[in-house]
Image 1: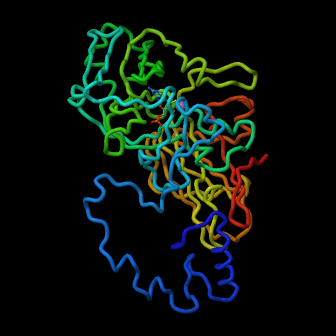
Image 2 (image 1 turned 90 degrees about the horizontal axis):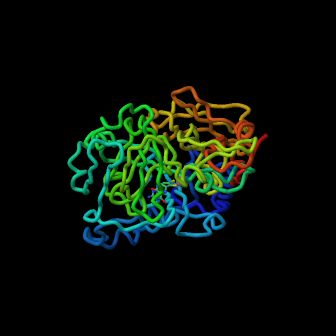
Image 3 (image 1 turned 90 degrees about the vertical axis):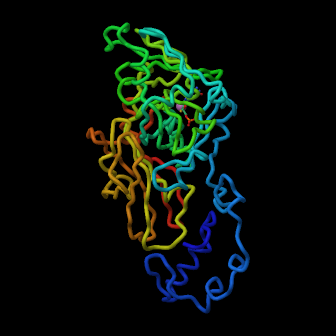
Length: 427
Ligand SMILES: Nc1nc2c(c(=O)[nH]1)N[C@H]1C(S)=C(S)[C@@H](COP(=O)(O)O)O[C@H]1N2
Ligand SMILES: [Mo]
């Protein structure tokens, strides 16, 4: 579509309906014939009569101004304090799977800090053979790996437990990003320090903390630490942005975002979990019987339709419609996604843009011929372990309505005849 969809989309839709009614006709969503010549085709345009911007005008590029609404956003009532707060990735406006760093959600407990590589130190201590301190340059000399992983805050979708609340996938599901990380394995650093002194590794832990005021300390079981955890320097090919932990952050694939310690400064090998603030008073799950469950590290399979959705109304009439969204699982690769347009009564198999990848976002599409009637749009993810994304009712049976974290329920958008949609629940 060449025109800019306005919020209601009404003029565009009215035009297309009008065109259809007068028999002008539509082919695959395009306008075949118009009355009279189109000046955008027949007339010389301003941009063809001048020379454009020189190559040295923009040493580091920003998106074109017409994309200025593809930005992080907050929910004001959730963001009482901007220093200890969160914003949301505009997932409704992105395609593919890689999240540009510039609009990837941020979560800070005490603000983002500016830490120079020259001032960076990483200490390994505790039950290691030789405690070590690495500079940034030291870390660069370990063998490097590249992996794409999603990072999801455990609180993503946390405002939806008691009822449908926020209108837009950016707000209901935007505490997630997916980047290609370059870094070294945590295993290589632990082996450099030596784990003989630790004895049996089965009951050992690593405690990781950041250099910011909050330190955001978390305990990670040794088994995970030696498996796929990365100490990353780069994301999507370039240095980590300040807000994502420059110069070094931890990447804990498939596990809750809180464990992905930014501005990583210390790794301590211990024989017990530290039970820090971040893993006791926070990031635990209230159950239906009022007790709390801790150590729910893995982010279970989840998905959401990003378009159409409340921030992305349908701006054309009946006919071809692309339904698209994202799916992910902290337990491995996405094996399939189902989409329903009738609130979960019937399901169609969506098309995965690429085969699912380990602990990374998967893009799905369902190409339908929309008859113009309202839809209750849902998506349901399956992962390679056989796990199926649950309904909200199924989750509530176990978790009640007072949880905050780890809400991976099926999301419903009520798409109306006028193309606008709303966040709703179906029972
Ligand atoms: N040092 C430090 N690490 C941190 C945090 C923090 O406040 N300080 N926030 C955590 C939380 S709760 C999340 S969800 C992720 C968010 O990473 P991002 O800001 O790159 O999106 O970082 C985690 N790592
Ligand atoms: Mo988080």
